[in-house]
Amino acid sequence: MPSELVHKYLRIDHLPHIWCAGCGNGIIMRDVAVALQELIDDPEVPVSRDKTVVVSGIGCSSRAAGYLDFDSIHTTHGRAIAFATGIKFARPDLEVIVLTGDGDCSAIGGNHLIHAARRNIGLTVVTFNNDIYGMTGGQYSPTTPTGDKATTAPYGNLDRPFDIAQLAAGAGATFTARGSAYHARETTELIKQGILHKGFSLIDVYSVCPTYYGRKNGRGGPVEMLQWQKEHMVPAATYYAMSEEARRDKTLVGVLTHTENPEYTEQYAALVERVRAQSGK
Image 1 (cartoon, helix red, strand yellow):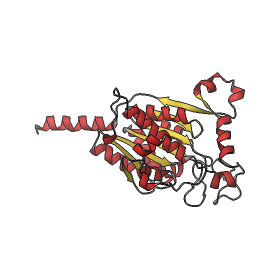
Image 2 (cartoon, one colour):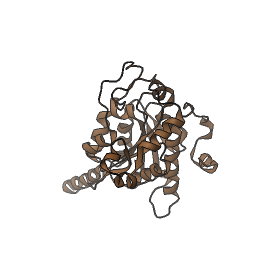
Image 3 (tube, helix red, strand yellow):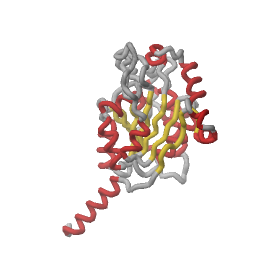
Image 4 (tube, one colour):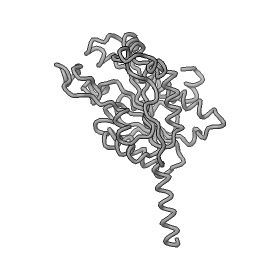
């Protein structure tokens, strides 16, 4: 991250951060900061620093809200989207960005995720998806691949994992995308698109956790884990140019769904005005 960006958009007094060496969360936080910087600096884009709120829940990823120097709130486990919904209803003019982990938003916070997506509330959700509960001891999460090991799955995880982006799309999210810690430039652009989209946006970003997930599953250190992302997660243009056989062990990085539907807080405001007009108040 450029020094000027660090001093402009991070709370220096909160550093150094608590993330383990090699964790991908710092890369994803950098992507969020760069995306916001580029939007704020663009005179043709209606995004400003004093009208941007960053919300997080509990987990390794959620510490990012404390490091980013915006109006921010570090909430309770699984409730980041619920708090963000309240902020958006109280101040629809604000840009509300949720930074959350795979466990935070798809386990204890799963209902908040699907109903915010269903309603198409104008939030941008960025998931720091490392396939494990990193902060609390390496338990398996809803995104841990079947067969992989964790503290609470020493013989291999029996569950089938969620694809968080597909889950959000199935619930009604009008913008979903997938990024990775390795594909920093592409992920930054996806976050920008999500912020500019009118409606519920979710960008599921694959992080790396060498301390727990990598160590328990023989994936090596951060270099090896990022190399795996380079080889197996490919941008959309490359992915669609591949044969079906070549795609078999690859994951697409890019926009997954992009549709248009009325944004919920705008509908709500219109309903209030209609009721007021009918009642003569």
